[in-house]
Length: 188
Image (cartoon, rainbow, N blue to C red; front, side, top):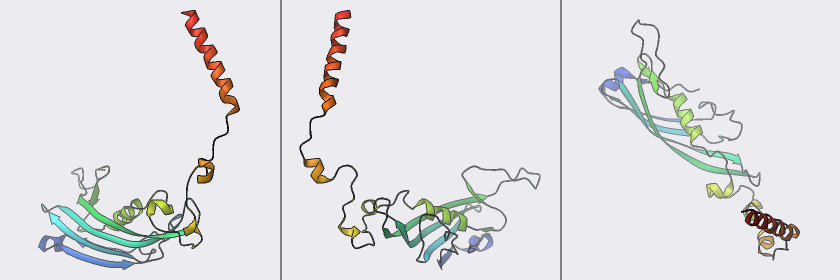
C-alpha cells in the first residue's frame, strides 16, 4: 500500500495539500472480490492542525469502478467520488509511557505523523453500493444487448396486465372463514 504521511511539525506551520494518482495495488483494493478498480484512484487532500493536537484531513477521492450487475450479471462501470472528512487525535497513553488506551471508533495517530491511507481505503470501500445494478446506479450495462432489457422483479408486464384466473382455493378459503366466523358468533 502507498504510504502517505502528514508530518505534525509541518502542519504546525501551515496546512499540507497532497495529490496522488494510484493504481488499485497502491490503494490495496486490487483483491476486492466484487468490485474491479481498473482505473487509477485520484486523491486530493488537505491536512490541517487544529488546537495543536487534532489533525483534520479533508478532500476527495475519485475513480471509476467496474462490477457485475446483480440483476442481469452483465458488466457495468460507474464513477465514484468520495468526500473525505477524517479527524485524528493523538493516541492516548495510560500515563506510564507505554500502554495505549483503546478508543473505539476514533482515528488516532502515534508519534510525529498522521498516515491516513488505511482510513482512505475504508472510506472508498464504504462509498460503494452494497448491491450494484443498472437501475440503481442510473448507468447502462456495458453489454449493448442488456441496455435493451428492462430489469424488473415479479411477473413480466404482459403477464401482470393479463386478467387473473380465479384462484381455485379462494372460494374454499372464504367458506372456511365463514364457518369460523359463524362458530365464533354462536358461541358468544
